[in-house]
Length: 136
Image (cartoon, rainbow, N blue to C red; front, side, top):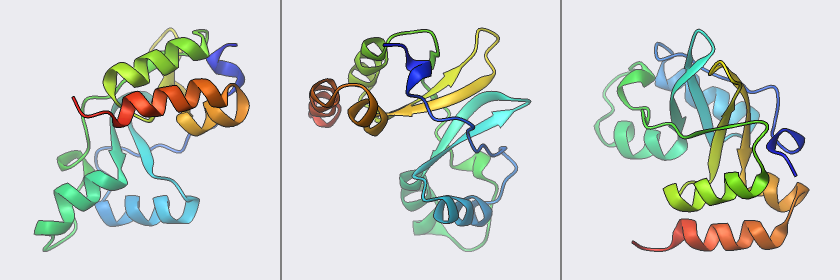
């Protein structure tokens, strides 16, 4: 099964200039744990709820742009790759979500372990989760 069959679209994105408070409010409103950070449609990072808690909250004296706290190491995959390929990449990188891009590097969707479990294979998602949380 291909990633495009289970990925979430459209994807809500933010820019590096988005304030932490605005990003957090958007995440709360939409019930999301992460937002891809894009520049002209190309992913350049990802902001997670963990980024906010670990990198901003302990030192928060004012609002800042998320470009200062986002995770710049974004892991992407292509919509025409297989679910197994996505799961393998998640396992290797120990992450729970991948940003899906098209052949030009423009964001096309997002796929999570939950998407794999709900729409493809609970067994594959379970195995992947085990490797994601494994201490290395």
